[in-house]
Image 1 (cartoon, rainbow, N blue to C red):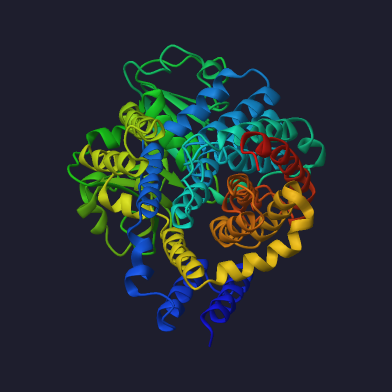
Image 2: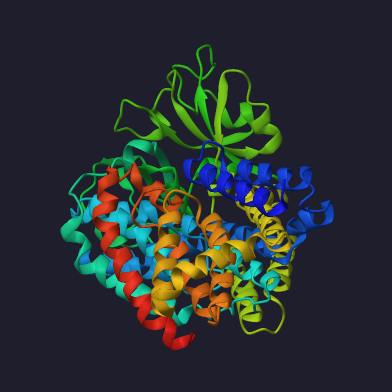
Length: 578
């Protein structure tokens, strides 16, 4: 069979599989790469070159650096600080959305949404705002921020990495900001003033999906809570923790009033999700006494364990069962479906209780058959003492790469190496942070782009397209490519949509005598605009908790997509002339 016909058949088959997701996108991409090899359309060296490209290494390194920031609690701290300082619910929400867009310009959209999700949901709950009016704007703000810099989303990096093979210059670090910043500003204005009128009013289901733990935490010397009232502490308002009781010496005050003043040495029984308890421990200077007494060295793990029938803990308090001495680990908190307002130390363990346990890796592995590990939460712990170093490494890599002092790939790889050497992240966490399906997809599609050009298929297809699109003129061509890319990016991954459209846009522009640059920028922006359906990962994160329907995204996302389209068409030709 003619190579051009064969590769066009493979191209259509890949489009169908990407759009329908009958197979995972990375499996489809691997199948496509295998077909190129089996039919002799690429040599092994050409096919596997993508896996060693600087684009793939840069992507993997950025995934790891984002995890380093999350591990240090930097992004969560930003959200909590904003929530503390803002006085009105509307002002808090708008400040958070603006911050999300700014943070997302330099980190993964999905990670940013995941970190701010409990912050925004908690703020909405405390302010009496339906969570459905806050969570979709959160996801959309993270997507808008991703169009500002080269590293704002993996799609931008993928497009930039594919450009040299087509004879085009890679994207500059802040090149997209010329259109990304106006799009983000207009998009945020839409989220502030228009979206609330279109969004449904539904309560969140977020709390149902997060276990509410009970924990005993003591106010340590120098704590931010020392000498302040519960109202001033912001434990409920800013940290999402409910103070069930306060123990001072031999006295215990249950359901303490907001005017209750805390002192050093007070032990607070608090209730809240795991993340909130861990964040409170790290930022407020409150400690678990059992954790302090536990001597652990080396690899310390944090796990959830469920108490099974036959456990020696049943019917006894943790102190009576001598949990710390028996297992060499400490219980930070306890979750029980039937809520009991009682100090953790007085609760008698029952079958089905879930314990939040911290201890050395060897001790955790030897907990026994009657304490079954549900999940390892070690990566959720944040250490704010290391936050300045994490920020310094990330900012240093971005500045050096963005200013062109060293290639971006070099800057981020060095930053990852330093993060590992300084133990800001373990090698296991680093490998786990990499989104391998994205890496495989990008590497395989880079190889497909090589075959698309080498066989002449790109020339044939773009020649046919140029004949159809020539009457539209440059503005019409830009609009058509933008609309097609937006349409493709709804059912398929953003990266796949961009890589499919890129050679077509460049080839068609050249055939018609236009500069390809404005069309490259248009496709890059359009590929990230997944607002109309909830299939974008950031949108999927809020889909369930916000209790949204598919049509909710169509109703709110269509207007935002139209605004993005108009702003892009007005700005792109002025910055990158045809």
